[in-house]
Structures are given as C-alpha cells and as structure tokens.
Image (cartoon, rainbow, N blue to C red):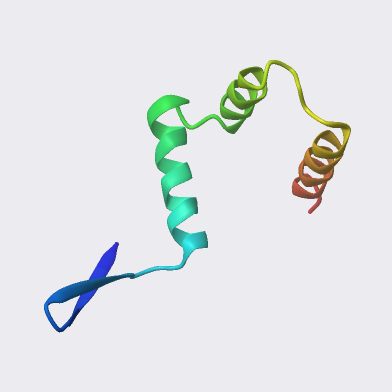
Amino acid sequence: MLKHREEGTRYVYLPTESREKASRSALKSVLATFFEGSLASAVAALVSAKDGKISAEELKRLEAIIKAAGQP
C-alpha cells in the first residue's frame, strides 16, 4: 500500500492507491471479518456505539444515502 523514495538519508513514503480505494478495501475487510459481510449489522453496531445519539442532521443524511442506494 506504500512506496518510498530516498531523499538524502531519509525515506519518504507515499500511498500507492487513493484514499477512497484504500478505505473501501479496508471497510470490505472489516465487514467480512467482524460482520459476516452484513452492512446492516455494521451500521447497527455503529449506531448502538453512539448510544442512540444521532443528530437530526446525521439521521437525515443517512436516510438520503439509503434512499439513493435503493434507486435503480
């Protein structure tokens, strides 16, 4: 996931893929490892971790994302 180059006596490390691609890959791994691939279980765990304290703005955004995901 990293590459490096030498600058004098030190190494400078750089990513080999975009943040978006790396985060999607990491999330897929977390889903597979901890939630048997279930997005619903992962979301439920995140919501319960917040002790039910989801702002109205956050809830509205989540609803919009879910609605958009269900559109063909």
